Length: 553
Ligand code: NOJ
Image (cartoon, rainbow, N blue to C red; front, side, top):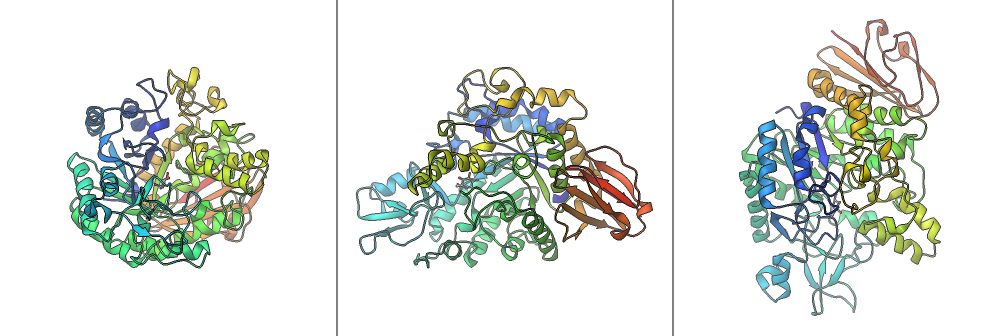
C-alpha cells in the first residue's frame, strides 16, 4: 500500500452530527455524512472513541471496548455504519486506548473487589513515607497516583484519576488487548489509531524522577520494551493484513524512536503522530501560558522531522489540527483579516509534505476557535484542571480565562458547522458545548455552494496528492531555511521537482526564484491560494500566500 497516496479525515463523534436529539453527535450522524467524505476525497475516517465510557475524558476513559456508548448510538448502528462505509469504499479507523482503562472497567472493578488476577492488570503500589509510591505527576495536573479503594495502596494514573494505567508487563493484559483489536479487525475495520502508545512501557520499579518534568517523562516514554510490545501487538493482530493502516499517537517522542515505530519493514506501525511542531507557543515548555507562536521553531521542527524521518525511512502523519489542539488557523494565522488565505496556506504546507495528511473536522471549511467569554462555556477536564491550578497560583480569573481561551482543547471541539440554521445544523437540541458564533458565515452549506471555498481547495490538494507521485513519494528538502517569514521546500521525484512557498505573515514578501531553483523558466504553476501567477525571476508573495510550482522532467 502506498501510504503517501492516502488522506485521512478525523471525525470527533461528540461534535460531528447529532441525529438522536441528545445534543451530542453520534455514529448515525457520521454514517449520514458518508457522501460528504466522498466528495472531499478522503480514503478513511478516524473516529475518536465511542465505546462505553463514563466520559470523564470524552471517551478516552473506556469501560467496555466491545460496545457503543448509548450516548453515541447502538451496536446495530455501528454495524450499519461499517456496512455503509464499506459500500462507499471508505475506510474506518478506530481509536484504541490501550495505555489505560476507565476505573469503571470491569477489570478495575474486579481488582477493587480484591481479585488478585485483575489487580495485576494495573500498577497498584504501596505508598512511600506516608505519601505516593513515587513523585510522578499526571499529565492533567496533580500527582500521577490515586487511592486504590479503601486500601492503603495507590494506582498509577498518568492522565485523569479515572484513567488507570494498564500493566503491559502482565501477559494477560497483552492478550486481552490483542483480543480487542482482533475483534474489530474481524468486524472489517481497516485502520487503528493507538492512543499514547509510547508510554505503555513503564519500568516495573517505577522509580522517582529528579523532579524535572522532561527527565520524568523519559522514565516511561519510548522505553526499549515499547518497541517489543508493539511488534508483538503487530504480529498478533493487524500485522496479518497488509491493507490495515495504523498510527501511533506518540507523546513527547523523538525522531529516532518514531522512525523505528514506523519502520519500512512494517514490524511496528504504519506511521506516527508527533507533537513537537505544535509546542511552539509554550513559555519555558509550559502549555498553560500566554505566549505567541515562534515561527522559526515551527518551521525548524517541521523541517527537522521531515528530513530525519526521510533519512531513517520513517513515515509521518501530517497534521496541524486535532481534538487536542486549538485551531491552527487561529493559532498561526490571521483569521480576522485573511481567513481564506490563512486556512488554505496552512493546508497546503502540510498537504505537500512527505507523509500521510490528516484533516480534522471543520478544518476543511476553515472553522476557527470560538470566542467564549466564561469558564462556564468550557467542558474539557484538562482545561478545567488547568484553570483551577492557575487560580491556585494566585492568577486572577480574567487572566486565567485568557490562557484557557488560548490553549483549551475545547477550541477544536465545538460543534461542526453544517449550515446557518439554529445550532449550526449540528443538533435540534442544545449542544453539549456552545456553537461558535461565526457559524452563519462559516459552514458546510456555504462552502459547498462556492467553488472557490476552502473546501474545494482541500479537495484539490487531495487530488494533487493522488495524481502526483512527486507529492506522495518525492524526497523532501527545505529551502530558505533562515528566512524568518516563509516556509519553503522542494520535493523531488524521478527528475521532477516541486517547490512550495508559504508566507506565514500578513506582509507582502519577495522571493528570488533564480537563487533558489535551477532554470526557473521551466517551472509551471501548480496551485496557490491567490490563483494562477506568472512565473518570473522575482515572485511577490502576498499575505499568507502559498504557491506551488512544478517542473516536469
Ligand atoms: C490522547 C488523546 O488524544 C486525548 O484526547 C486524551 O485525553 C489522552 N490521550 C488520554 O487518553
